[in-house]
Length: 351
Image (cartoon, rainbow, N blue to C red):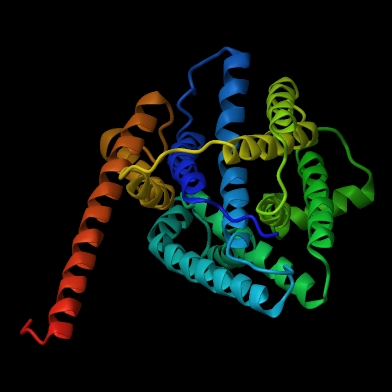
């Protein structure tokens, strides 16, 4: 039985997406830069870190809501392909938008032309980010996740197997992140492995979508009960705060927390209101443009390439929200004009 997202589910998604977009802004602007209380930093870091897993889970959930029958049927494979091409197109467009900032970053770093080209290509195909374009890694990770799912579906793997393999991949990614950040001396083979990772994908987080995305798809058809969801969320949150200095353990607790949080969100129904549609559109725009806004704030106000703290966070968030709502207003106006023209043409009236 296919359990699709109801409109009320989507309302809570729209609200939480907007909040999580602001959490992403916080990740990059460090509003608590000057706060010296470890527990406060741990709590807020855990809250902010829920953003990207939530986006992965939500994307997978909404995609699966369109599916009927077996996940690996030809019709459902076509839906995954459509999403793959849509996200790939978005990634290419926004990489082009952020290209000037990438060039600026390589200029101020003093890198040679050849080195800059090599690093840019690596960032484009393997990392998903360049100077001040950090949010775009999520798009590339989603592309990888869709490719991962497509390949396994084509091999006739069950969706349960896809999730299981994805879980193995993310555990390896967590362990890799731990090894890369390990301060001690590593044995030869792990050291060589870390060297390969540093010189290719740089950060194993690019693999995270291979678990979160298909698991979000699973939640579209199988519920996690409210008590279990709350326990997962609470225990994961507390564990992440306690073990935040251990990368592997903190990532594991974050996974538990993120899944629990998403499962709790699925239980919340919000009545329809006009605000949810603009919040949904605004969250996407904020996510994609805020690094440009922050860069401008840093250069024009602080005369610096980077400035962290509460004020830069507020300025970046406020300006990004304003820009997003202006964009939505313009787009809605164009849509209304197009609809009116289409109606006039259908009625035989002059345009």
